[in-house]
Amino acid sequence: MKSDRRIVVIPCGARKKLVSAQAQYMYTGSYHKMCQRYGRSLVPPEQIYILSAKYGLLRLEDVIEPYSMTLGQPGCVTPQDVYKQAFNYDILDRPCVAVGGRRYTDLCRRVWKDCTTPLWGKGGNGKQMQWMKSQL
Image 1 (spheres, rainbow, N blue to C red):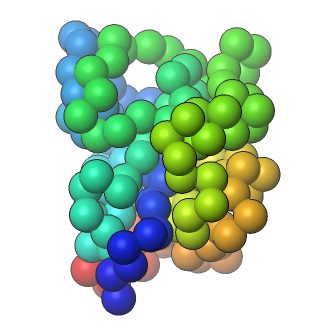
Image 2: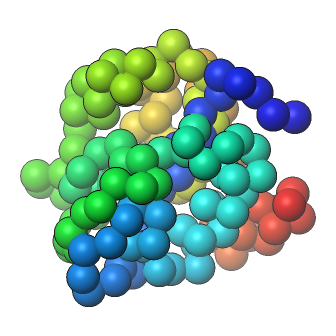
């Protein structure tokens, strides 16, 4: 069921290209790719955001430089940073589907009042990927 207002937030990934690229192509790991496929099955691409540990909310077409940072490390984005970005993008009041691991979905739940986490309780990355694939 597609919704005009819903946004999907997916996690970045540890595996990245070595050169600058659009966010949708920067992350090369299979988990990120599956999250992106699943997100695209829910909403149009312009309603998908990547939650980057370094940059915060990224649109798929945003061009970024490679980096090495994980959510939770010193210097990475905070819920306050992401809140400000969501406010600036005018998406704070939109329903959010947070796809990804606990650190990413916990951050999203601190930013959006209406936030669902479909992968919650599905197990590790492998089980989550299986579940997402079954939903496509």
